Image (cartoon, helix red, strand yellow):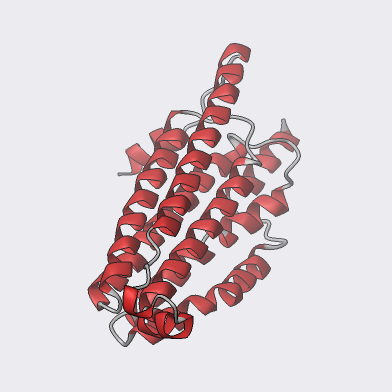
Length: 233
């Protein structure tokens, strides 16, 4: 296991041609990720519950009758939007990608599609705890994939632009965990009640703020080690 980790984290010198290719690959990867997120949001909107003919003219009755499904759909859209904005933030701090980073990013895309599936089931199933739990698990996996991609890219500033500082990198290394941690929190709440599960997502701003505060000013870890090495050289 240690040998595998060492191989994955090993930094090999890249020539000018390789750097240019990997820069173009980053643009293609970003375009693909944006396209998938956009399609997922469109599908979620189209999957919103439609009013029955008997209550089509009564908005209040429709909302009351379909409240659970509407909440699941809106939460799904919000979670996807948060991950989309997070993806733009993280990719915006890279100047290139490579094989392992692109692989992790593609894995995240497939996990986003899995999350879409479970949200669709939640819209149909309403307050089924197993379906809600599946949404939490898939959302957490999307977040952990994003965190893994960022940790790999930021290890000794492997794929980073020169504009982002070490303190910003350290802050993001913690901040990127806010989404999956929130999703794991809602996992247990799914078996309490649908309302508890829904309210659990409201913890996200607090968790994000705590992790952002914990990461700001951090000077430990691989990033600082790389900076120290550069100064010595």
